[in-house]
Image 1 (cartoon, rainbow, N blue to C red):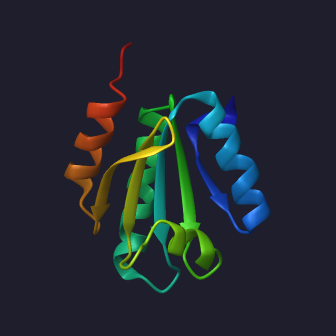
Image 2 (tube, helix red, strand yellow; image 1 turned 30 degrees about the horizontal axis):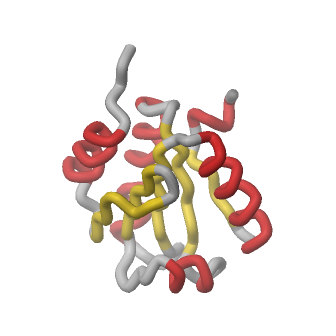
Length: 116
């Protein structure tokens, strides 16, 4: 269960495919944080995304470095970082471009409200 309260970082396509499929099969809302090590705003929002993962343990959070996983970034047509793609039942329902904390929180809360 510890994995559920953290951001899952994937560094290889195989790792991405396995962990992403597991999350899709679970039926959870999925938030993909497309980032880059050289991206200043990405570094600023990373701790906030970790906080959200703890606040929304019923949501699967992924961190994808666009330089490590170019194919995944291309598949989701990511053109700027940070970009957040939110998937519900495997389909994209939201996309946020930029380190926009309030919008990210709002979009996650809309699709995966905290019921406790």
